[in-house]
Length: 376
Image (cartoon, helix red, strand yellow):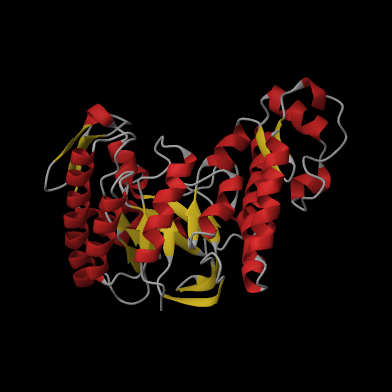
């Protein structure tokens, strides 16, 4: 049965340590979820995610899986867990962000979103109900409702209309979920929208509370707004959400951002940055960032990060990784992705320990000072 248990809360910041209980295992929070958009975390095998990284939950995307290979195909093959041979938990995004990023290829109505496939131009429609049906076919542990995600900046008028539509869609989606999929073994999260306007964020959250949902997400961040504004919207929103339910901020962020969101009461995060940046030769370390193609690493025998215990850092030098990157070898993407995801997951484990031992303020102070030093 899906449930959320809080083990400790920082009295100074509101940071929480807890456990998400799912049908596919328990997940310690706060947690970062590697993104596996098309039923795979690019560059890695499931055994890497389990044996090397011990990732407890990954994210899949409804839009991409709906288009290819199709949710009914995945259903017939036993659901997404069996299809991709992943025994642990899966969260699926509703596809709303991807659809709205299509810009000229979609049309919004009260019913839902009509869009053209980026693959072949075929026309499709997502409704609040249909995106729930797709995710039920996939068999995800945590599903998201269809929402409207605006780019930054947006006017207050446009943001209000979008937020109100998101609330109406959430009500329709949740009614459908309760009628067809609410068996206690999965969860469904509505998404708080409202762009960068505090009054709209508050109004959206207050209305979504009426759903008594399994958990709540905060969307519409990392869409071009300044980092400080993203954190401000999170800080405004999290106190409005039920303390007993998990809180998920979607699509954030850089490594230095993770403690800041946790300090504002966030339990779950995801982002493509660690995997995408890894493939592009951009590596995150405890002392800053390493752009591996730079000539200074040509004969550097050190690991990417001497403080990291990942497979890559235990076995390979910067010089070797630079060689692989410049040679265009696929092995580079695997090794770099392993390292970057290890860095993200290590940060979350460090924060969790700080919460459990009452050291959040000390951890934040050290993390912020390290950010100043490494960016200087």
